[in-house]
Length: 58
Image (cartoon, rainbow, N blue to C red):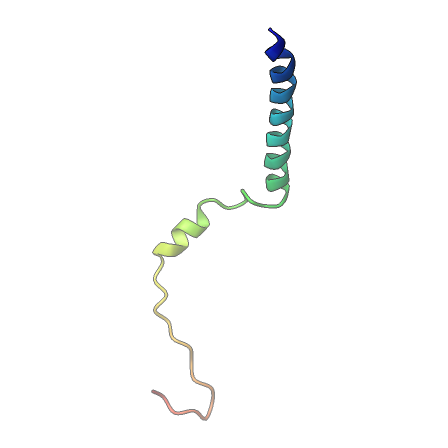
């Protein structure tokens, strides 16, 4: 029974820390776009840089 006097407040502190971490990450923009980076991997980027004027084409 004496262990509950320690475990209950400790669990409440852990919950508040977890909520603080979640809301800090949310305010920082961590969860803004979850789908975009996964789709960007699938897109082809076969374009090459255009040479500067006066430079020969490769």
